[in-house]
Length: 71
Image (cartoon, rainbow, N blue to C red; front, side, top):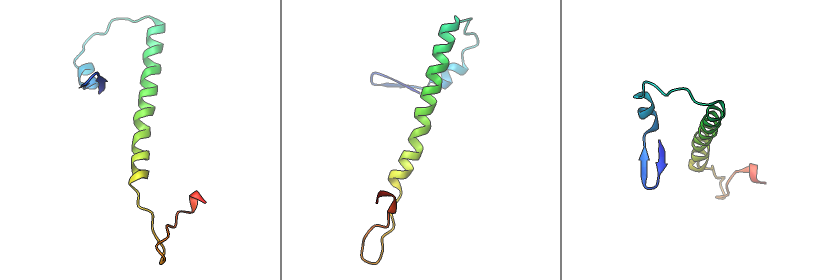
């Protein structure tokens, strides 16, 4: 999906219905590949961050968090 203004467009379904793209120039193919790589990385980075934010940190008997990574 891509976001255009206030509209979300399902990109993959549109791509799958296209039978012929024609031949693009080498710079255009490189730009498309770079865009797809960056978009994929951005999408992949969402799930780990979301999971980390949703993870509850255990507490000890005194009500203190046991997160030693921040010390």
